[in-house]
Length: 348
Image (spheres, rainbow, N blue to C red):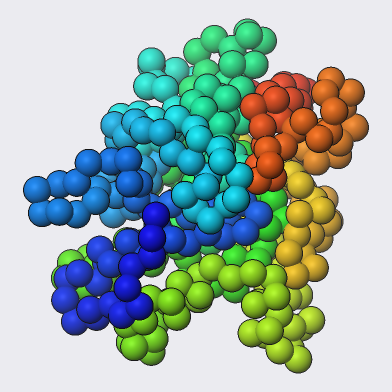
């Protein structure tokens, strides 16, 4: 998939469409892959490629319902050839159609790891968690996969406030990898960028408008504000990098606490899953968040330690060549998390 031209028309309704098009070329490193459009989907009568994400729509999971196609991690700048099938259900989540509105209702928040980048439907973490819990006696459980590639805690807090809280879940699990921390350096969340539409008063955003204007409509400048390598971030922060990185860590931790508080205020339980602790960029790791969770009485599962110490399969088999979880890795993560949830009494 090629990138769009270097200049955006910033004075027309094409702004949001073109921003969506440039997002096709965004290839975040180490799990922050952002995909909005797919070349496998047919075009509409106006010639626009339909979006995979439907952030401005009514669908709680932020994905357009009824999508079904074969994607490939290679499409997003990853060297590995990893085709996988992807389907969205009627509620806009990746996964099968919910058969009922049974209880308990579990919502999974996260990025491309929890979403299941690189593995087929049925092999994602939410899929394996659901299957394990159903086999353990929770036959009526509903697990919604609200994880999306490229999302970090700012996006997830917006998801909760905008749509997911209305579902009144019993349990929300936030799946965290250390690479999420770096994305706190973005000027806004991805959700705000992708839902912006200057012709729709309800979707206007002065911060996005200012960003586009300051970039002179140049897509590569806007893109680099949202997707950057560790080296680019350090270079951008300059001499203040150590101080700014600690600030990003603090902001991330504070937002996790705010999300927890809002979820529990709704009557739902909250749990934190920590994965891939050594996967941090720019020196950021999960260790600080683990310390905060302990101090703030946030229930968390050290999934990274559990996966590294398990003896079911070799650790190398837990991951795909692009470093996302393999089908086997998701299966291990699903079983371990199910055991933790049951042991903690988090399922009603």
